[in-house]
Image (cartoon, rainbow, N blue to C red; front, side, top):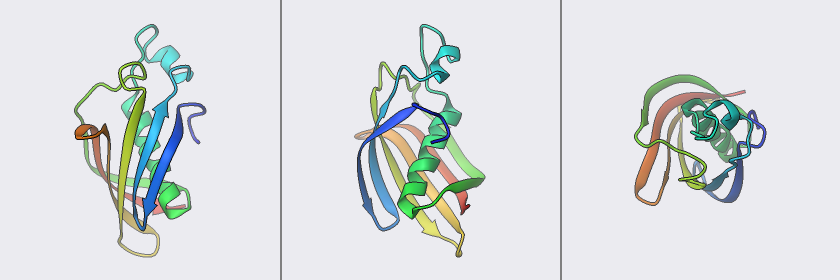
Length: 122
């Protein structure tokens, strides 16, 4: 985990190259001390890292972000308003080491962050 104590995976359902993770955002994580004191907001870059780490669990290896074709943040995610979120991951193999990643963070039908990217096995 790149960001210690940022999240806890509560449940995961992995089928092939697709997965759904139920994740708790830990409000006591140090990242919230600076983003923002008294009114914590989950940084977009931290949520992208969360997606990357979940995608790595699907493939059983660490992944490196190569390119982002779409990153849409539609809702301000906070550990108080959104203590639990769902991370949906779909990977499509492009070659032996590179995958197309389509992922989202949200809850039920609500999408808070949508990401389309290219990742590489490390």
